[in-house]
Structures are given as structure tokens and as C-alpha cells.
Length: 281
Image 1: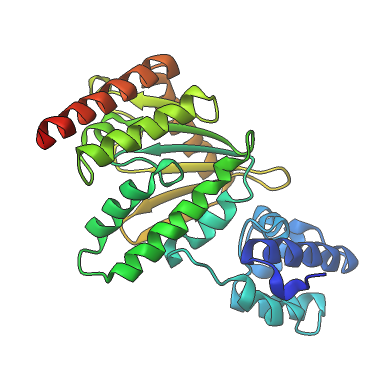
Image 2: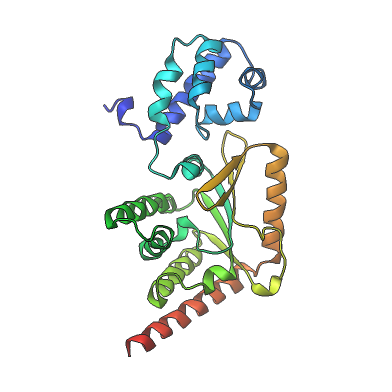
């Protein structure tokens, strides 16, 4: 039987979270009471226990002191915090893997979970034009592996709102775009994801400054994640998450219906396909 050393970081965090819950209950302390001693919210403690948030090194030291766990958290959290994803996105990606529901808005590109390998490669080359081929290959492989979340037929629920700019901005080539949009359309047709397009005609909207991701879990409070180049912020404050949820709801209300969105995505995909054929002629 495989031991803990064979667990991936996300699974290891779930295991450590269970140990944290048992140790806290033995103390005995509520999540809120432990949070006060750690200078975080009770919700944050709940997310650490569910494995949706990392136990950072300084917090591991405090936990071992408060809960008298003999260095357990210091010993085990280093491996649990290792990630194949960029540091600014690692915690969000790991939470995403545990989410039962993901709601996402992207203003400039197709969301990572919906990208084809060719599209992802073009994106990474734009981000890192001087990177070695093996570096780009690794990034593409990691993103493709991340998208395997959608191999499960029902979980997580993914609801994506794409700005029309993500459809119209040519990434890679017409052929790459045709394939990428057909892939999104196929996922929508098979009802694996819900996709809406926020058209240019919607004008000003609730998330003009960038992307937004909301994640919900079985046994932990929801999280919101906003991202900019090489930086990101994962938020658990209930009022902040609720504010971002309202922004997302407004985006959905101003977007095309899923049926009309699918028609637009398919139409733009065919436009790219025709353009590619014209280039080859």
C-alpha cells in the first residue's frame, strides 16, 4: 500500500488538514478561537482543515506550539506546499482541484481549464518569449493536466463567462483559435460546462479591471481569486467574497444566454477556420 510519501501535494494537504482538525478538537478549541491565536479568521482555519488553503511555515510553528503536536505541522507542511504551478497561482490551483463549483470570468483569454494545448502554448510563448522549449513544454503539460478536472462528467460544476475579446483576440493563429473555440463549444454542447459570452455591446460592466474566479467547496467556506500578470490574490473574507459574487452575478446578467453564446462561439470558430483555409490556399 502506498504511504503518505506517494501522495500529491493536494491530497497531502487534505490529510494534514484532518490532523489539524483532530488536534484542534483535542485542545479543545473552536476554529474561531484557534484563528484568534493565529491572527487569522475562523474561516481560514476551516479552509486549512479542509485542505483548500496551505499551512504556511510560520503558521505551522505556531500550530505546533498552540496544539502541542511535537513538530508535526512543521515536518509535514514543507512537502505539502510544493507545487508545479507558479507561486502566485499555486494555492488557487490546488483549491480549484477540491472545488465542487467554479465560477469564472475572463476578460482577455480562454480560461485555463478550457484551453487546448496549442492555445496554451501560444499563451505561454507570449508570456515568456525567450523561454527554452522544454520550459514551455512543461508549462503546457501542467496546464493540460490541470484541465483533466473536467474528465469527471459532473464535478466540478464550471460556469465560465468569457468576454467577447477572448473570442476575437487571435492567439497563436487562425487554426489554433478555430480548434480552441470548437473545444469550448464541444464542452458546452455536451453540457459539461456552462459558457456565456459577455458581448462588446454590454458596454461598461462589473469586472472591467480583470479576471475573477469563485470557488465553492463541500466542507469549507468559498474563496475568490483575482489575478494579474505574475501576481494573484486568494480571498476568504465573507464580505469580500460576497462582493465578488455580486460582480459575477452582474456579469452573467449582462452576458448572452448560453444558447446564444454557443452560437456566437461556433460562428467565430468557423470564421477562423475559413481564414486558415484562405491562408493555405
